[in-house]
Image (cartoon, rainbow, N blue to C red; front, side):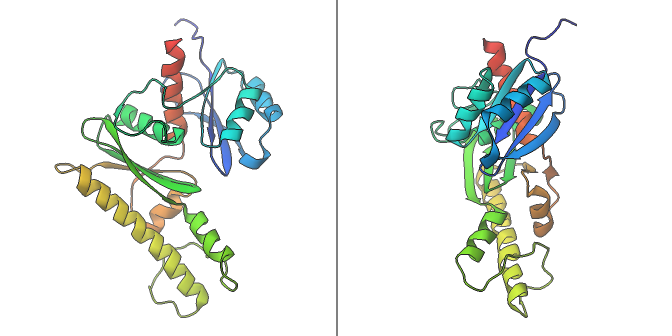
Length: 252
């Protein structure tokens, strides 16, 4: 087998809270995760060190924070930032000028893994729900607050409410403030997720049941709160970055 000039490939998934890094050794292989860094602590020096230690030959990133994109480029000039101009393995009807790179990556892996009929829910600082329809077209989705974002906002804006402890509630009627808070947040969040999944499914999949994928830092917690058993893959977005990064690199 000929030596591949773009592998290993360094991957970066830069979100509002953290930047996840991984290395993929060949097309379609599972990313080998590297230590994540808080977004606020990322520097070009740290990126440069990761690039060198990974011994990667190419790099691709999803970034939803403009100032972090500059840091990634400064630390690794060879990095390709995926976006609206990336070579996609799916068609789309969404406004590519506004859709986040992480959502494109999620749809790229959905198209690669299943081809069609997929809803990917990504639970991070924000929660995104994106639809790949029965024609393999990314037709849009929904964006909601992330689980911890919602809890933090409620605690920050009130004088006496503590942060909620996340667990599946046994009853909707809380007998004290902590139980009531847990009911409202955990039960309310589960209700929102169920509603969005049901609405997106009914609206877009008339004859079949879509594959449901959960990813992001709170995917496991949300699945437990909701009593659902979706496909959970913490590396889903990184895999999608690899798919798009591969296609962009092959274009050169």
